[in-house]
Image 1 (cartoon, rainbow, N blue to C red):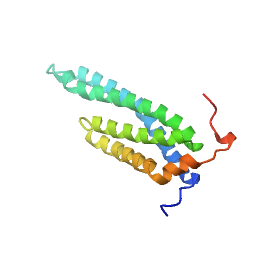
Image 2 (cartoon, rainbow, N blue to C red):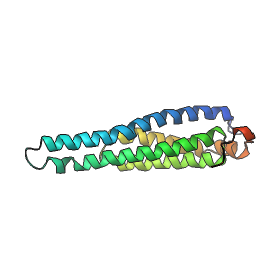
Image 3 (cartoon, one colour):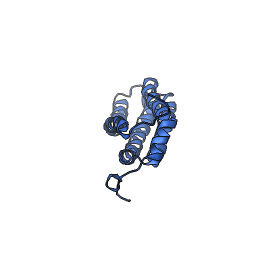
Image 4 (cartoon, one colour):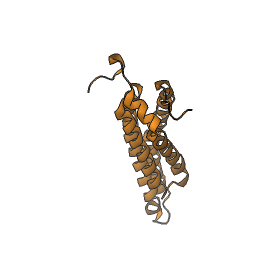
Length: 155
């Protein structure tokens, strides 16, 4: 792609589809992580022979509940951003960069407990930061003239 030309808004359809797929994954994670935390707590309490099992699993349970909360927050944030991304609003680009930073921060937090889970989060975050920080993307969002029917309703 020629760096002097800006991207067409049709290219952002890929990003909205990616956000939709990530939203499905986040919704599943927001439900499954707390369920896994409760199950792990129950299993640790039931099979507690030495008296130290619940204390050993407590950090993992806290991380599961924390990751479930992060998944819910990111799900809501991405749903709002996706509406603005369809309309190619300048706030959507800034929100996508913010989402990228949030994914990287959550990956760093998860690095202490769930090593392999932090790798895809960091990759997604870095990808969002790089794509939505480019000058061509910035120009597309700042110069795009939206039609009134493509704008999301005022909230």
